[in-house]
Each structure stands twice: as structure tokens, then as C-alpha cells.
Image (tube, rainbow, N blue to C red):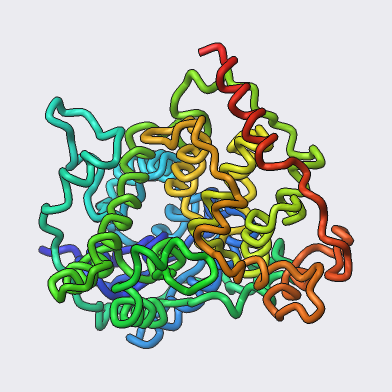
Length: 473
């Protein structure tokens, strides 16, 4: 006889109904399906903005489930103990989920799977938030790729399965287990007054994500290669926010890009390449977990970076008060919107690790706290790329000049005008919103004088190059 016991479907970074392989498989069984989201040991470790934004994603997805006649069960606690308690309460015979690929998540899932299988449960995992799972892409000698370009060449012509349709119904259990109330979790507590400032800049939920993808493909993908480098214009897709929480699938993005390429839209190949760069980060995190917490190139452990987060120049960097307009505008955009333009991310990372000679982990941790689209693998790879310590990294001797970068990519200086109020007679709302978001104890006002540079770009570059030339490796 077939098993009719409920399936617990454990949701993580896959908060959507469309193109959801595991949830679709559960629906097709005809068995009762109990969707579950856990505030587990990994979620509890998220920084302020990612945890708050996750709560918004969960709230939106709960509404989607209600729209098809089912519900989302919320529980807080360690993953294994909480799932076991739910199995006991519901009589479930299976626990299914979508795979994750970063080391903390894979280690948690390995332990949970082993324990639940020992409990004689059916435990299954399904493809997660990558185009190509890490064990399916190998070099000619069977290893993993450490350089992006050959990785791209390997996979660019590989077929990607078309997205699945949306799950339209899930069989309900005879009795629903108790659910926590999302508001009782208070996932936005650490955001304080910043939540009200950041919220208008977010695009939350599956339907909104699909609309964002469609608008990008229709109106902006053509100019994407050039526009994505211009911080003063809306030239990117913005989809990193939605991909982070699985509000849209990477396959949906890929096939939209492929259609745009077939239609002759010039920017489509660059967009597809950026999607594969995201996969590249997860493959590296899967094969070399140290990417997320220590120098990927182990010899860089000997490099004399500052690791004191309380040093005055680090504080100035975090608060957008370095006296370098491109750096300060980007850091303020981050705090007021939960995002930062990609060109800005490269500039602020280079400035911190090279001009200020600070360890990339300082910046990585700040982004972990402030980014609404925080992504563990891509954040780590981006920081190590900028610092010079990672795989396929920008060489340490390549130092972005934040003054010439601004002149090149924003010649009218639209970006700093948008985000730096000091010195402007009538600053825009964007620039003033930063002061509404920051903690009051920072004691910064738009009426303050704009600071002098804490270090001149040429002096910072010279110091960085001297340290590199005198390194012990």
C-alpha cells in the first residue's frame, strides 16, 4: 500500500510556488503536505537587514500559500529537534527540502538527514538555487574550476531545464499543527528605525519578483552591459534581492535571458554570464568552504591587514564619512536602501582592503548586517575578489582609484548628489533619508561639514603597494 502519511516540506531559500522542484514533487504525490519554515540556528545568525528582509519574504509566501488553500507552519528552534517535534505531532512519514550549497547549510542538512533517516523517515532533497549543481561541473582532470572564464565556457551551452509551472494545490492534513506567529519572532528588531527608511526600496514576494524580471527583460536588458556600471542610473536587474530568498528561480532568470538573446537584445549575454558568476560562487563555497571565513589563498594569512573594527578610519568607512564621494555615497546607499550598486561594491571593497589596509572580513561582516540581498557565497567571493586573496581574484596591485572611477562611470556626479547631503543647499530626499536611518548615537547631521579625505587616494595606493611588495610570501 502507498504511504499516505503527511510530507513535511521544509522551506528555506525557496519561497515561491513557481519552478519549485521539491514542492511540485510533493504535490504530485497526492499526500498531505505541510509547508514549514523554521527560524533555526542558521536563520538566528543572520544580520539585521537580511533577517528582517527574510521575515518579509516569509510573510509574503505565507499569503501565496493561503491563496491556494493551504498554510505555512512557523516554528522556532534548532532544525533537527524542531523537525522531530513536528513529525511527532503530525505523524509525518517524510521530510523533504530544497538543497543549499554553502558550508553551514550543507553541514546542518547532512546531520538532519542522517538523524531523520535513523528515525525511519523518508528524507529527500531536491535541486536548489543554482543552475548547475556543484558536483555536475568538473575540469578535464575531475577537479573543480578555480577560474571563472573556463567555468563559463564549460557550462554556457549546457542545457538548463525549463521552469516548472506553479504549484496550484497541496493536499491538506487532517489536523494542522500549531504555528508560531511571525510577528512574535520580531525578525526586524535590530533594524530599529531603519526599517521604515529601507522598506520603500524593497521588492518583496514572488509576484513582484516576476514583474521585476519581466520589466528588466522588456526595457533594460538591451543596455545592461554599459548601464550596470553606472551608479547614477537604474541599469541593473535588481534580481539579487529576490534570488536571495528564492522568490524567483535562477532557471526562470536564465530562460528569460536566453529568450532575450534569441531576440537579438545585445545585453542578454552579459546578463547570462552574471547568472553563471553567481553559480561559480556557490561551486567554490561548496568545494572550498574556507572561502566564507578565511583567505582562500592561504598564503594571504600572513598579509598585514588591520583587523581592528573600532579603528577610526573603519568607523568612517562604515558611516560614509571617508571624504571620498564615491565611497561615501555607496556606503550611504547601503544603509538607506539595503542595497549597493555593483560598481560601488567594488570601489568600497578596494578602498577598505587596499587604501585603508583593512581585512576583507571587516567589510564582509558589515555587508552581512546591512544588505537586503545578502548572499553568503557571493558576498564572500566578492570581498575576496576585491581584496586579492580569493580565487580568480583582482590582483592586489590593481587598486581602484575612487576618484577616477567616479569620473569614468558617473561623470556628472549624479550618484554622490543623490546620497551625500552635506554641502548641498537643497539636498534630495535620498540623501536626507540616510540620516533618518542611522542610529541617533552616531550624531551625524546633514548640516555637518563634509569631511576631508581620511587618506588621499594616491597615498593609500602607495601604502598598499608597499605592503604588497614587502610581503613574506
